[in-house]
Length: 287
Image (cartoon, rainbow, N blue to C red; front, side, top):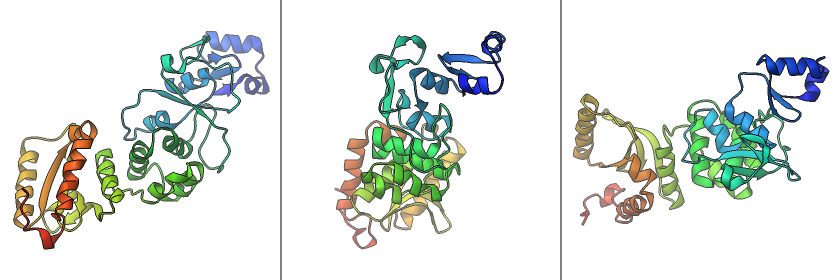
């Protein structure tokens, strides 16, 4: 991504710029802005709007776990005007019609955010997710970044400095151990009700479980592409072994967590309210 002034500084006059566009060496995005292929399509669309790609749109570029949000997230200056359609620089922007979420904020903040022309760095983008999407979607992406090693734990302080003040506590709880957004969503529930919870815990010689609530409530999250065949049978044998050792094993599907979460979390919390996450109350009936 480069401004026309940058091309001029490199010794390219209008004729040579036009020749570069004609040969496909440059892509004109909007007046004064060009891209040198290859450039991600959403970055081009954000610049065409008049800002920089940010928030969940950048998280997707990194291949992070994100909850459903098809909008194009664009950070623009607070004084921005004459914003354009992401797909046609001749048309004025209608954020609702064009599926654009505008973030009216200047750059500022820590210098080492990884920002570049047309695209915010991951640090600023994750901070913007707290402002726009809320705690759960932002934490899903944040913990995915930590788990995949694309964001160091040291970056949490910078995210906290850029995020709204209320996001400080969730950011402090961020862990690199969540293997999926499902684990993050479930773990946040137990943090919210102040119940001890750990992720990726090895239970004896049986296996590592997704979430252990209290002493004995095991929560396993089965994703969209949950396995079958030999793996399915192995998991069920291990579930049985954990049950024989006194653990209560609960399996939650992707749909139960993503689409039916209100009902699911009510039922899981009911188990906790009955004390079934503690060894001392393990004999209490489920009815």
